[in-house]
Amino acid sequence: MWRLINFLSFFIASTAMAGSQAYESLSVSTRTVLQRTVSDGVVPMFVTLSDLEARNWLDSMMKRLEKRISEIEERKAFLMTVHYEATRAGLDPELVLSIIQVESNFRKYAVSSAGARGYMQVMPFWVDLIGSQEHNLFHLRVNLRYGCTILRHYLDLEKGDYFRALGRYNGSLGKADYPNLVFNAWHRHWTYSTVSQ
Image (cartoon, rainbow, N blue to C red):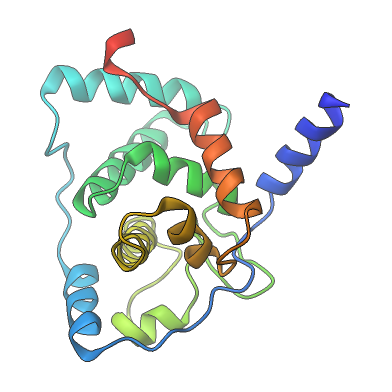
């Protein structure tokens, strides 16, 4: 029975999950803040960790991600970008890795049946709403910048309630399936502790 449940969990997690992300009207001030957030430049380094902490985190995550992204430099660039964009948005990088696992299973060009794109399965309406037409949602940094900005917006809207924010992110507010998939991935695969280092 557990094998079947594990298989189903893996199967569900390996498909693009962004089913019905809903367009929601944003106030002008919220829209302006989000536009400013997605248009800021990138800083390609760890800005919140010491060199040793950064090396330990990167080593740990590189091993975990090896089966999904085999090329070392691509994996390193991916993880550094995830860490930067997550931290920049005030999110746990391991949470973002969990969302990516559930949403796209680390497939850069994943497209859901609803049209969501890339690693974090961002709906194209967000480009019109808070971005600009030259933003390519299949570009690593752009996709992560949008995904992290959107999740941060939903966390703020839901006053830090991860369950509800994840439901909004997936377009399944109030349903447990999606948040539970993310929480399971987070706790099983991506939780990182400096104590064990």
